[in-house]
Length: 594
Image (cartoon, rainbow, N blue to C red; front, side, top):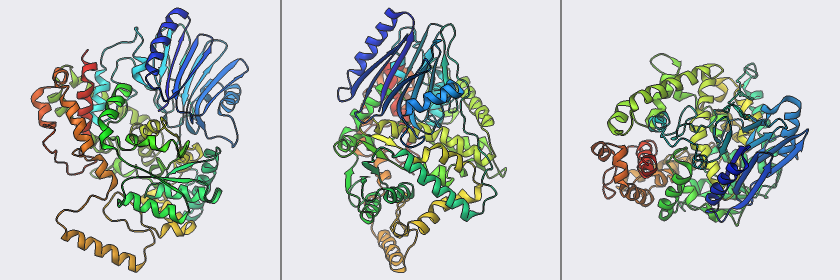
């Protein structure tokens, strides 16, 4: 992760005290490189991996600072690119460009503008008064300032319990916010910060008139350009899963630079993910780097993550991060297929379909998201320290109002909503946590890719048909390999009769086995009864004294039994999510109840 904290304050003594306190926290991350920038009344500190892109420029009396990548024209310096855009069109151009970045501009007038990538994937939290602006990639670093309110945000807590992530730009702390996608942060001394609309994604009907064939070729050409732009620094690693998103990227990378990229594969030998990804790497002649879950590290990683993030992202998974330090000797940049399925495959649309009403609406989408959280009634029975009924209602109504404000046709709204919520707080968190070790490169969040996907008709996007047909027609040698769909079987997109017969025979033999080894990588990794999560459960129980100040003890015990007692979940991923959120709140309760 890239740790950044900034303060704008004309009182140099007060600013200096905060910088010293924040700097002491960053000193705990000894393996990360330390940086400091001062410009006028602004001081910026960062602790980042050596591979993290850092840029600054000064043009027309406006200082521009960028951490990360802006996927603009090839070869352009992100700070200079943004500086030119700001000079031509104003400071709100700081926000909403394609890529993965955090940017700050400061004008001669003292106005400060903060922005992130188009989807707001890069974390940015802020607090302000008329005299001070604080911002950071961690809400806990903002919270260090003595003027920052130390009260728990009931609405922030409500979002975490309802959907497993903070909603409506809230955090667990009153007054510490994250700007919504499509909004920058602007501040000038004399008034609190504002979050004006800045370069929002607006779905179009640009490609509705295209037949399927031309539309598919347009999408593939757009992806190729995105891969070329985003990998302008020589890519050293490709996070290769067993699925289609990364497989398609690997095909494009191989076309651009054959054999130049190492395949980074997650999982244990014999698992579907490793087997399917390994086949792609072999066909493309990619050297392979393996890493896996280190269950023995889950407890330490969970404690560190809570101390830094304060549940500002989902608290569901520590597999990749537990062993990611193994990647450092092998690569600096890590190309990945994050968010490829929703952008190119329409996977975020079905959850919003209301079968009873025959439309896409908020009720269906909220109900599907609530499968990862608790019902309002359950929240009332759990929380005793705070009045949550009104907070839950307010959180839900604000989410409903946010849905109404999302532009586009109903199926386009569903895609944007999913990208702005689970995509941002779940998948986006993976990218940021990996950045502690290697820099994430995400071609699918290139702005042109996003706009192309949001301009396609639903029948072109559904069932991932474009990805499937592109692999079949352009990358057939990859289409004939098994594909991991997080299921027990891994049929290829183009399957020969002998392979199909072998797969069906394997299914039959598997039914004869009373206890089969779990070969689905993510089901093993997310299992709340695995050794890693058992360690986290023991840590959570060790903090019961503070947890019982927040929760009703009897209700908490119904959801979180003794660590020695297995928890039965019909689905190891979805059904365990809310229980993991509860464990995180138990472990954070000593801070929340101070």
